[in-house]
Image (cartoon, rainbow, N blue to C red; front, side, top):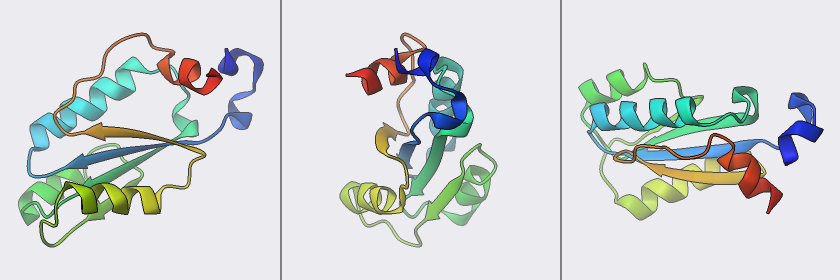
Length: 117
């Protein structure tokens, strides 16, 4: 496994791009389930939220979630555009894509396993 042999400050940065549109409760469930599931160190994760033109009230609520970067659009331009803006902003060596209606589960070392492959 990658993690046991490396100090936490030597792990590659993984950019986690979550895309959403006006479903704050589902988005919250997605990011909390992701953080609760993974054992990959938080300091080696870059959490990016890409919103696709949700109303201002929803965007304000989204800014309360534990993301590092908020990419908010004024208008809905579609899932492709929303995903691409997250990819362009990501600085990690690896990308993980989440959508706002996913609930994460599974083995807690799934990022380590993926990086080992």
